[in-house]
Image (cartoon, rainbow, N blue to C red; front, side):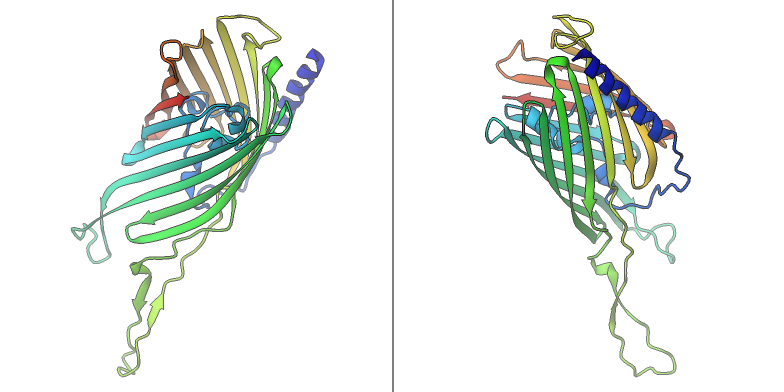
Length: 345
């Protein structure tokens, strides 16, 4: 069994090497719609460098790998808030509960809002005195199932809503995921396909309608109402492969410890609008009370290093309550702090 474990790890990282040896010279950065779908959620996941595809064992799994919610055997509630660059505020709410021992249902809401900005026009480049704002909402429903002792599968459906001033766009998408979980060895391998759906663009709003000017030569001609044709863009579809392993701890086959646990993880992401990217992360926990996390993102435009800490109050209360804090370096955009709260009943 130990040799099989080593073979899996070696094969996984060889796959990483083969993929990352390829160079995507035709990058499509900035050519997708619905980019709230790329706003990462889950304080623990973000703290571990977003290398969470092969872990996915809390409510944020609905973002990272829809199969992961089947690892949660009790009702779970998770909330996250982050104040990002350019006055962008991002909220995440996730709730999962078991239908049976093997079937889990979940719902996730992401809400993003941008602070007010002044309206400018060609005639009034310094501003008209009017203000506008923008917000995005994604509502996700999730179903996951544990098929066997080791195999978990999941599917999620998403409703996407975007508003800029008075104009709106809507769309639907879905995710597929699977996890192979060797719990007794502390090994987990996950795969997903995210954001499968049709193209999306602004489609409704009063500013899309206008009346054509009458020709000077034919002042008596009608002036029919016309509609602006807005361009549509594909969703940020991606495929991810992730692996995690307990190096130190009760479930480790390497180093046994009853009080300490060291979890490492790595993910490979191939997305429609970016070249291959790699995420790595680690989490050290002591007595299931305090955890320290860190990670790094390779081949990202801005994101890089992240670090965080988590406090679990399950030994002091009847319910499992966890509070998390994460700091993320966004390069030229500055740093971002993320706060998270999780309840398990």
